[in-house]
Length: 65
Length: 423
Image (cartoon, rainbow over all chains, first blue to last red; front, side, top):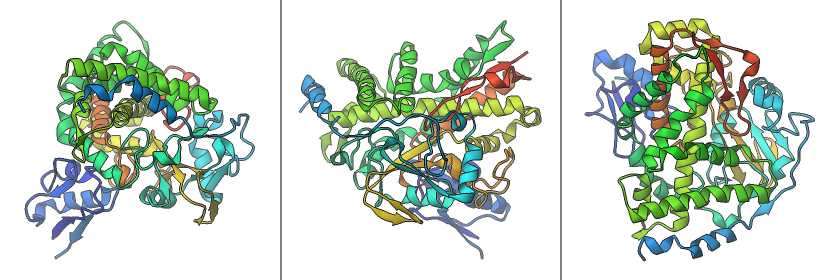
């Protein structure tokens, strides 16, 4: 499973890095960033789904493998 | 040009020229019909707007009014989000619905950038401020905020009944933002007057409103001069020295952004803290659960933000158009109700209930699109800290008299009198 943030949609609400701080961080302006290469470790599937379903801008895309 | 000669008497007289705008007739009196004559100043709305919004959403769903020179109230999430995203057809030139519309020439900057700005200027003005309001940056304010919350509760010593809105919720954002801007802490009571003038004085005759707003700008100019003489490391100094397009900011931009930071952070967070305490005081099951499970608080805070979203914004329609079934005219207001969007059953399960462990909560309390609340990370920190400290220090609390609770009128909604029995 891979995760990606659409920078055109992200407005820096920060729900992703609040809810899944091991997978997401913030840049210098508060926009969400994916930590690492976006591969979601098996133990973090729940966190990433929580982040996806709470993003007000629907900016997080999840690619199921 | 040096920083000093930007803020002279000439600047003030130029600014007074900008009060040339469009004034509309002040309409008062009770609402005749919510679909065609809505008013967010109506006592019924101020006391409890949600049944009115729910009813309009089912049978209208975009209400109209001739008040304030004409405006629309969408109540569905879908319509609110479409307008928030559509900066081509809806301008942020003024974001407070009143009887005064600033001149069109004020766009795309507006009076208090970046909240009043449209693209493309908006993006550049916002970038100047974003770094100061990231989650990382505002975390540095948390220890001081927590200590301040404790000091407010220390002052309750010996009292059985306290006003949680006036004696607690109100002071927290005032202290935090005056620290960040570098304003004297003892000026707090003045800030409350500025907030009331700007956000609640919306149906005053336009010239009286303009006069009141100018008191805020006079105060901010005094602060600018103090900072030029003796520049401390704070947001005011930052704005005075900031550059855009290779030049220092215009004096209007500096003072307008200071006004935004001061006003937008106070009423809103004060309302959010107060509404959350009001809910907990009247809902013992939620209060007991949060006391037992403090780890649930961040989730509960999101639900309080959804169900009691304090902020409604406004937009101005740019050109006449047919939009989602209604005929909008250029210069009509849009009352952009994030609270109504947040209670739309098409978007949320159990939309009318407060579910403190709601896991999926894509609420719009901080807006949607390019104008996402700049201070959202700060507001969340203050809200969480204020509730954490309150719940740690005050085990049981109840509404002393539900009928004595009063709510603010206008676009920012929260309790202004909230007597709670704390022992």
